[in-house]
Amino acid sequence: MTQIFTVTELNQRIADRLENDPRLHDLWARGEVSNYIHHRSGHRYFTIKDQGSSISCVLFRGSGLSLNFELKDGKNVMVFGDVAVYRPQGRVQLVARALRQDEGLGFRHLQLEALKKKLAAEGLFSQERKRPLPLYPERIGIVTSPQGAALRDVLRTLGTYPAGVILSPAQVQGEGAEESVAAAIAALRGRADVIVVCRGGGSTEDLWCFNSEIVARAIFACDVPVISAVGHETDVTIADFVADVRAATPTAAAKLAVPDVEQIKEDLRSAQVRIVRALWTALERKEERLEYLQQNISAKRMYSLARDARQRLDYLSQSLDAAQGRKMSDLKGRLEVAEGRLLAVGPLATLKRGYAIARTGKGLILQSHDAQPGEEIELIVWKGKLRCRVLECSDDGE
Image (cartoon, rainbow, N blue to C red; front, side, top):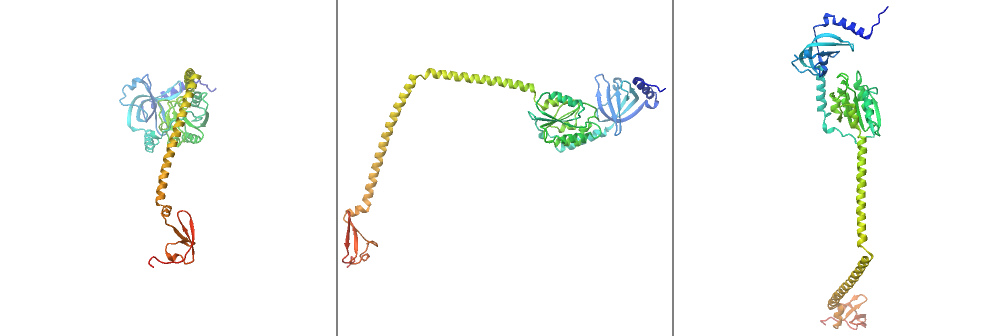
């Protein structure tokens, strides 16, 4: 009969087989460090990897005392130790007893740094292009996995804020995640006022798609502000550099995306109190003014004001008549002077001295030959006209 193992028994058998294999003891392994954690207990947990695979490692506190370099993500290291099984999880790991720094940084780390320099040179990280978040967004776009805890955290934090939530689902880790996230961001163009790109915590490999160029350019091309909330507070990706705002967690991103509803209510209550207080103050001032007018403008006072106004009107009327009379007298005198001057030089004054004007139907007679003997002419004297007939025409010299 086939033996049936419990999980514990199965892990124990695997551990026995691996730990009793001399080829898996006292070995050296080379790789790039990632997911490095220095626990408060003094133990160090990390992963070493190459382009094809990875394995978990642990460096216990006692073995780590002789470490003579800074262990961090992206370092190339050589690990000396034994292969073992962590039985509670059935995880194969390399228990390190010594570490040696290998030359240079890991390939993936170098790729990441090169991409950062390229995008920074193109201005994708520029602070000048980062846009402020809208104060009261009506449509909030979310790019994340529909099954992830990040979505639940964001929706719970948004709570009852009256905004439309548009989920643009995306694969946030694994093969094809880069293209999926970029497509989900592009799908929200023209549909949201602010976009939250988020996912929960994970290993460096889990978050690696957010270090891709395609995701960075999708965020940069967004038509609205983008909040990046990838992993935990200590996780930083290229998406965080390109986004308009970086949030430590998806929950923090949701808080940044919308105003605090309770704070808005409190501000409205404070504004209402200030408005009511201002209205009451203005009303009290009007009442005081009305009371003053009632006390100081009585019927007797109004009669006195009207009497003074009538007297002032009479005085102004008299002054206007006197001024008009003076103006008329002045104009009349000037007219008489002008008339005298005109008469002194006009034709009537000349006629008055005994002269006359002779003319025919053709015009004025200025010379003797302007008229013919027997022709009728008209003489204009100072007072009246004479019809005459010419008897003879002669020049003054004849």
